[in-house]
Image (tube, rainbow, N blue to C red; front, top):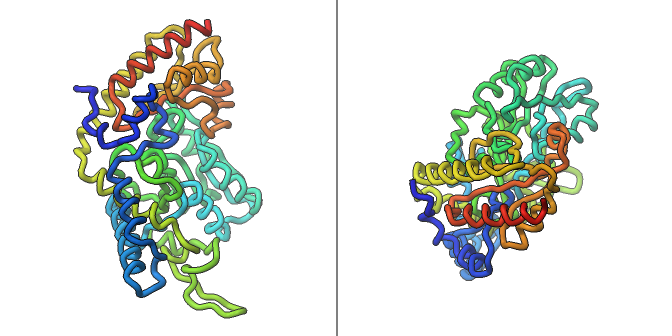
Amino acid sequence: MSLISPWRADFPALAILESQGQTYLDSAATSQKPQALIDALTGYYTCGTANVHRAQHLPAERATRAFEDARIKVARWLNASSPTEIVFTRGATEALNLLAYGLEHLIEAEDEIVISALEHHANLLPWQQLARRRGARLVVLPIDTHGMIDLEAAAGLIGPRTRLLAVSQLSNVLGTWQPLAELLPLAKQQGALTVVDGAQGVVHGRHDMQAMACDFYVLSSHKLYGPEGVGALYGRGESLLKLKHWQFGGEMVRVADLTHADFHAAPLGFEAGTPPIGSIIGLGAILDYLSKLDAAAVTGHEQALHMKLLAGLEVRDGVKLLCAPQTALASFTVEGVHHSDLAHLLAEQGIAVRSGTHCAQPLMKILGIDGAIRVSLGLYNDGVDLERFFGALDHSLDLLR
């Protein structure tokens, strides 16, 4: 299979970066943007901006129509039952905080909130703080040697006091798909709500909310080749009804006087204030772009690149993968070499990778390391990018050893 990306030319920044001697291998942190997004943002801002839902003039009607069209596109992308199951947020992090505050009234002292040991801080800290506020217990599911949540341990830890399970779909450090098909039913059997952090997983393939059967799913646009500052919360219809409002202001209120207010239900009830309208329209444009791609070709290209990446790392002395990643990224350490020193030397040679704890400090402590190098791929990367990376890696290791 060819390692040339047929979509690379769609991303104008890559040609500029290449002319500057830069190779971008940090897509799990944030992605480059295609011309289709740039055109959509330019079109919105040059045709006249307006706030949504609140006026009768043409610019407002045009903005509202594009805004709500984006909601329909997100619902279609996730196979939600209805666009009303999509709440726009300012990213996956805000969506998870929304849930932690919106579900707080359901958590009592000695109840249990279950997460896993591999969570990004965004899917740890909101639940940690909720547990402290309510006197609940935070239960942590261990991972096995393959970087997967241990299902046998989970079956013993998820019990009658479990009120909520919140886990990642795809680890941002280990690159492992988590066994949601087996894990989520364990929580459902106890009557618990389920939250899936899809910030990494949504980028790779289409994920059907009807088949996944979680209560809530969160995503960020900027990892999905879209603009920053926007994300989405999917909530099953009956699950959204359990949420209490957490931010208050314009747009989300139906009727208000000086002593009382009545609020909209989801989605508008959870979109207080002026939203990032242009970015949301841009998210809709990205989903249009991605929907036109050959999904099997994208998956095949990413898999072929990933295999080349793993093969190249595995033959280099002293390089140790944190586990066997399943898609799009690889995190590793090098014996006798500090990850930040290596990342610095790679950056000097124009190689953009990520170094550190990757917002997963508890996982790093479990693994007994203080950080790692992460190489992460996008659909625009190709074999030449990896050749440059391996050349720079070899040169860096020669200098450091």
